[in-house]
Length: 357
Ligand code: SF4
Image 1 (tube, rainbow, N blue to C red):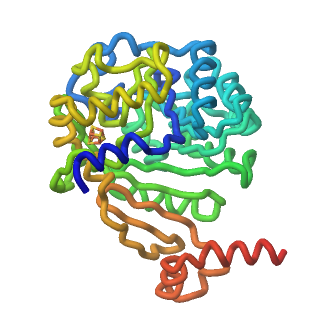
Image 2: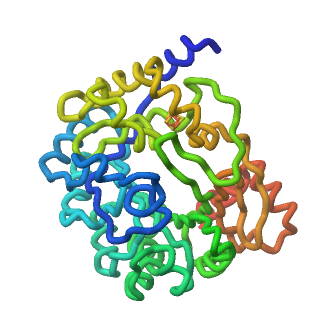
């Protein structure tokens, strides 16, 4: 495929997910965090002062109008912080639903009591990802700083309450970030949530960030082909309206200066075209991409599939995703279960069983 064909395909892509960063604040400053903790070589918000703010409801409404008119289907509210610190989180969720859009959020869960979760489910959250890195409070509070016992308890119970109040209409996922100092925490998390009806548990590799890009620890770089990054493409709107093309751009975008579009001056598609041109031609952007390990993670080879205890798992260099085995399959030998999953029969069996009830 020529470079010209690659970029033609990029410009003709379908965009269905819009990430809106409605707040820059967080209840924690975890060491690994590339925004609030030590996980970035500089001072993230000091170097980008215009994004240290909350979006107003009017600004969010304006963006949602554009998203809905331009055919987007999902709003991702995962911020560079914690969505639930925004004082009007319930109104934001309700607004999104008024526009008929689906919503996903990644949260640390530390602020969420049972009543908050019930309200979030009533407002219509479709996909929630809760970060649970450990079930041991002593380890947890070294990772999530400064976590009180209450915040810890809330975080570990949050996935359960989302399932309790959201039922089958919500996809509940737990995300664990592998901690080099606590290498065995994932096992405890997998055991604890085993039969709690959650949809997925994912274990991600730790990464480091700096002015030169994102680097995943212990992962070899692939040969780079410009334009082939699969992490490129879905727009991200920062709290001041700046539109970014990918998570990798969180760090270097100030270097692009006035060239970066703002959603309050453009449609989302106009913003995307401006970013496409920068991605294709801007020498700073191109050289940043060469060092960005999100390129490698997006170009990952087919995952290794295996059975791990009562889970079916898919593993790449950057992430392992675990899906609980239904009880009616667990009596089979692992190889037979694996075959069922590899052939795509697990979903069909589930559909037959539901239809037969
Ligand atoms: S390589 Fe990194 S910076 Fe470049 S498009 Fe992909 S995610 Fe963005």
